[in-house]
Image (cartoon, rainbow, N blue to C red; front, side, top):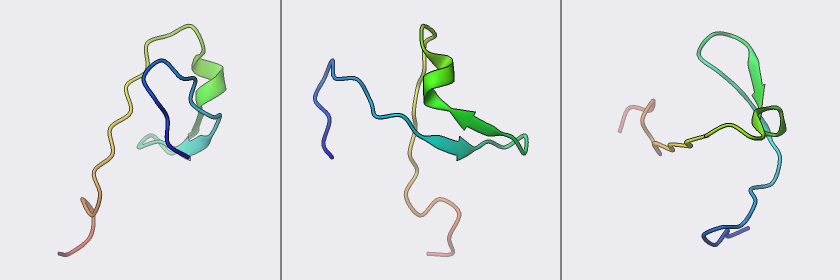
Length: 44
């Protein structure tokens, strides 16, 4: 799915570095920045 500027992101849950899960919908109303680092934790 490709999002355009201003579109609402679909809800998802991911593990965080603190060992807990973070769900996007629970952060509604707050500023959220998503950063993706492809291959950042792989030996390339």
